[in-house]
Image (cartoon, rainbow, N blue to C red; front, side):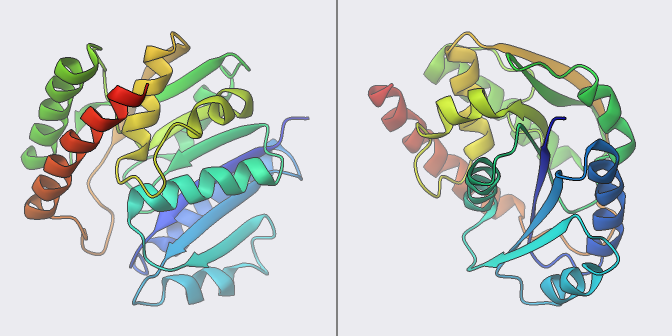
Length: 234
């Protein structure tokens, strides 16, 4: 039976984390006893980690992990390596803000294949004009730097078989801020079978977003520099 690891990074998500943990734990519990929900506390300053630990007795397949703050991309990479180290057959990643739906996962799972990568795309986004604008700019940047057209490069809703993740994750720089973007680029440049599937993407369900437009702009400028460097080494 396939072993699924769901990877969720979390930073200051005490308002959402119990709801998110319960919803996604139900998913892993329905896959197999060996499947795990790994929620990684990225140095939160609130009660995110404490809430996760308190849930463990009730949610036996939940694995709370904590680390020093390193940002979303670095935490996602940390989670991927964790899942691979512990023998996951499939790795799924989503976020801890409640914007994605656990109820849509089964449709992804039923299409899984060891040679196929499934990535959700946010067809009707409800998270604000500024973020939609950033996604459109990112598509243009990726086309001009890498020559590829990407439906939605950074969606936090992706299911990957271990063989393909292992093949490409080693090419992503350590602690890279846009690790999912880079993986999407590598999958497409490697001519892998990547399928984009529409998903619901609702507003944040609670708490405050830690990334504002100023931070996004700073990350974007650095990402362009990093993308150019990475391209030279591909």
